Image (cartoon, rainbow over all chains, first blue to last red; front, top):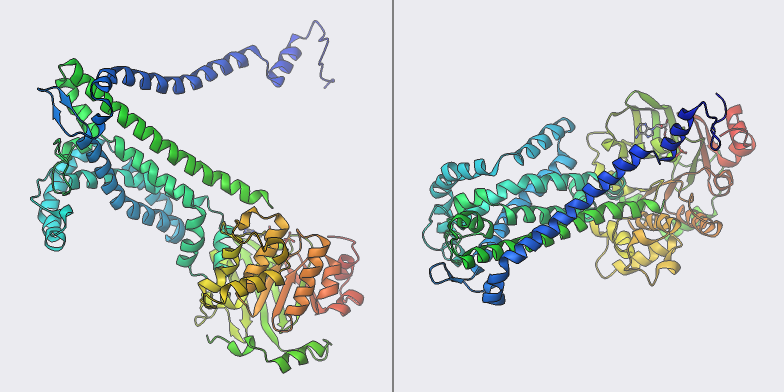
Length: 332
Length: 279
Ligand SMILES: Nc1ncnc2c1ncn2[C@@H]1O[C@H](COP(=O)(O)OP(=O)(O)OP(=O)(O)O)[C@@H](O)[C@H]1O
Ligand SMILES: [Mg+2]
């Protein structure tokens, strides 16, 4: 083949020039393609800002009327036009916290088992099934909650809980069925796949040399996990948990179906509660007055900010693990 | 298996006797570790062929050979690091103090406490310098909390790292330079006070001064420990080791007293390698 022309392409051979252009990357179609992609990529952050703007505009009347006290007052009275979101904020945080309390040990155990202890042939299928759990529509979880979980709780879980811990305020009173407990458990089941899947990725990213370092010092398999693998992946694991929290905070359908939907702050997990997401979903169609609608917008704004912040923290932590690894290998 | 605590504690008189003793082929001490017709496979890759050798007690044994000849593979066999390698398989025996390291009576955790290892690539934990070195003593409850700082300092001094990190003990070990990390890993292994120390190219990332200090350390350590060191540095092998084994494509071509192997090699491949004609 003759030498490749860079300048002064002979007139009879235009294909060489086009080929050169596409090689150096200033082909016209390349440029168009790149611009379209850049535009699309920028559209997503813009969309977030637009959503934030719309929520803010919608919430403005309520913001003006109630000020910051909206967050800590508990009256929710559409007739008197007085709105306070404290019970929903409390319910959202309490149900998510309860969910984490149940889901984190479970999900971490699964991830540790899958990456460190399970036989190799079991890893893929079990990992696959766990990820499949995340694909079940939440209304299905909700239905299952109503027809299976709540009766089960009533028959087998609540009586022993009451017998042992009934004296504490958390397990006090009558079990309503639809309750904070049911909501928390449904949420826990729904976020286990997320936390387990991300934790598994994080643990897989821990270099084998870290395990070897611990084992060579005379650590057992479990000691190596506890003293070397988990600390190495710590930031990423916390990220996984916070990612689960983000999911739990925003989950709507399944929670609405089992949490009881009552504007009330109760310490007992047996009582009904409410979450921000559930309230928005339930009450939008009933919001007949301007201020009612605006109050719901403000609830949405609070939820949006909360979940965005939580997710951002999670991403940063997970990202730091990946980067920390690069820093470690740099020294070689 | 019983922990051979008697071989760990060396009395002062015993120690003095060791210092004055120079190793001759005739008075080769009883091997602490013995490999008998040991073969090793990574899946279908037959990496070690019939390795038979004895590692003499309280001496430095150097393993040399071109890249990929199986030095690391053999070293990692000794503390059973291959237990974790999928598809790994072996035949033959490796005996520590006469007992098979693969035997049903051998507890692999105890085995690894007795056999320390410094890996080819530094692998400090993302913990502080102090916690890295204190890892073994804490794990194995070797020291009281009160003695721990002394023990950490001693290990760091032995590894020629103390001066550089004395005021940085709380900083992460991963923030040290590559050569410092290598010495940190040496200190971490020393703090565990193993009977047998396996070192895979411990000086590959070190400058001549640090290398010299590590070599001095090795000579000091062999009064009470047994050391196996993999090195690509002929001078180093000649300088510090008492015995040398030459590996070539998975075979132990020659094993003997270092001076003899370097001056009068019996195999022509050994001669070619040590004179720099290949590898
Ligand atoms: N984990 C592994 N899986 C499969 N094959 C391996 C593995 N580790 C090493 N090998 C192969 O086994 C052979 C011996 O490798 P080994 O690491 O023991 O060489 P080495 O003598 O230590 O080399 P170097 O001087 O480069 O460190 C090589 O052919 C290598 O490709
Ligand atoms: Mg090697």
